[in-house]
Image (tube, rainbow, N blue to C red; front, side, top):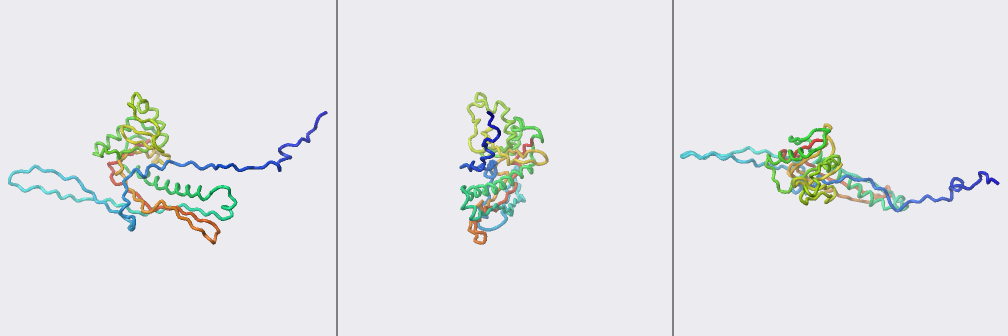
Length: 281
């Protein structure tokens, strides 16, 4: 005979089914923070005190033909100066109350301490990248993927400007442009590259093109609708990291919890315009 509709189901027995928390957490993805360390570090003069670094320029002198019985022609250049004013102070902080720390099965303080450091580091990276739009040398066009000709043209601009080919040349691109470069067969076929790398070597690093290191990061933003991809020598931009990023913690009795603060005092400035190229895409 039919059993009817009085069966025990997951609905009637819901109070007997436990809800469990797994041993893992889903950590938000992070951009590659690769750009800032690639530039000229002027930190030393302001490690202890001060808010401005003055760096004078030295220009080339002019040679003059010497005529008999005449005085030499003196060079007396008026030199310029580049100032790096340090006034960026970024912080990221959180407080975990005791009841949460005691009852949570996860080490939240460790997780969020790592995230606080990343938050400050990301801002520092982006502040440098934003300076790429100030380079007066530009190749490519907004909305059009980079190709081999733009890579070669950018390198030519740096070579014509007598930028040293001393291993301090780098390229930073948005991941969309990494995909575009993958379509250029000669960059990655071993029989065309002569054994050059085409695999990722370090975090965020694609490999090399024409002997120049290529880094990929979603921190590359846009200006006037164009991605801020760039080819540059390290002296194109000067940075100073006066403090940190540093992480400090303290127990706050009033809130019965642990306060953690990560902060940094830093800044950056374009130092040598001819040493950088904005590769728009």
